Length: 226
Ligand code: DX5
Ligand code: ZN
Image 1 (cartoon, rainbow, N blue to C red):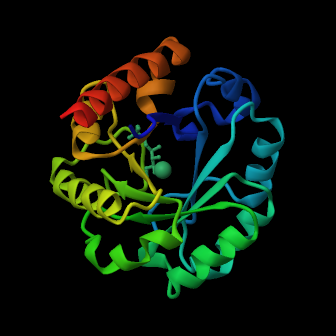
Image 2 (cartoon, helix red, strand yellow):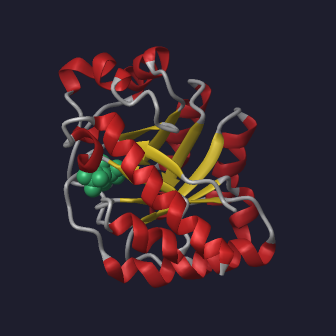
């Protein structure tokens, strides 16, 4: 059975108290760090220097999601910073195979993200170059948006391709994940779940992580028993 991972997004955390906010999610599998450049998406967050400080104090590994233009140029620097996983957007890369190889050669797991309307089919032959495929379940740029059910068939097709080729690629979903939508995403085949507002908007983030993990694991278990 594929492992269920819960990666809270610090986009919904208090940016003035990041170190304390990271301690509140120490039972998570990784912390999802959203980097936005106000070009690829209409919002601006943090850059490499702040990500490096997060890396220095985080109790869990970093899962960086780069929503930035010209990923070929900028993503390798995040791998050099020692991040566990670096995800770039397919739409922002001219040479995604080269970039994925570069990330791996610098010691990071290579992730590639697709916006909701980007089809997965053109990328199926390069899945073995990746450690993780991220299917966005909202338009990237902001936390707190509603889960887009129109992405479910793409998640299913990606899962079928991954299982069919026998490669070990994690399937991540990001955007609008709640205790309710995580079930639909897991049924469709996702196994790594990013949750911003559902974790940091909760009174007790650890308890929220536990509930999300319980729902995700239960769904993945029953899917593998079918
Ligand atoms: C959106 C970001 C997400 C965001 C998710 O562009 O990539 O990681 O933080 O937030 P929620 O879980 O609130 O939709
Ligand atoms: Zn994200």
